[in-house]
Image (cartoon, rainbow, N blue to C red; front, side):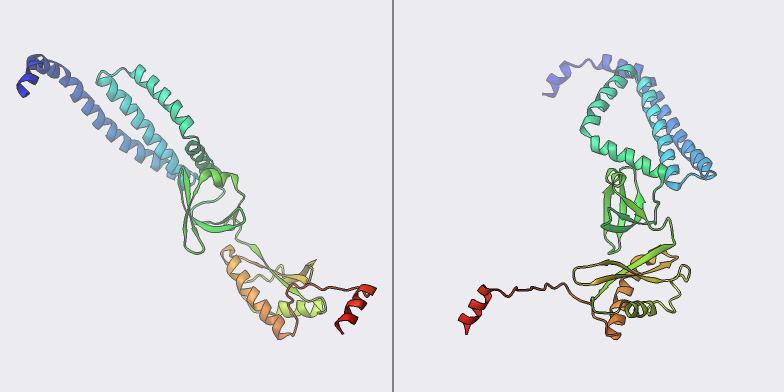
Length: 287
């Protein structure tokens, strides 16, 4: 079988072509080595130059990657030309393939564009405590081109597409460290609101984590179906403490109202029956 195969190959012609093509291969290898060294130099120079600017770390990394990818693309085209490949056809084919890929990967492209917008606009940065959509609160672990990695308060790692982050309502608690804490609690309608206010304000006395100006206050925020709804409000300089303080003072307020003998009602319904002939007949029959 090998003998039959060798009958169809002209080894002399093949060797001649390989020898003639060998300078192109050597030149391509040298160019690849040259561009590899060039990419290292460009990366180092771009990193050094950008470190002297006020651009964020995320934006610097993005620009350095873009410069490196640009050198890589030029290297591929140059090496392909050295090997005798038709660059025009290669670029045209790449354009058609890119067009087809753009339709197939619209979400990925949207995530990348949103990632670039996040890096440039900087609504948050690595290490910030944020709230997404009002439901999830987490710290920013890493910002990537396509996704952002978050760590929740329960130490759960959540990977969120950048497109979703760009469309959601994002609250950055770290951006403004001074923040107000609200602790809602309800009392029964029969209770004295001023007594409840004094009992709640006593819970914040002596706490160095809270600001004295503006001072803590207790407001009536609304009249509920079965309770007068109050809200203890105070300020703190550390936004990280917002939720721990809210949970802590919810318990303290409950204890303070219990110690003051002030009732915290639960939802209930009162029914009033009109005294009419039908009810009197039913009552007489039961007797």
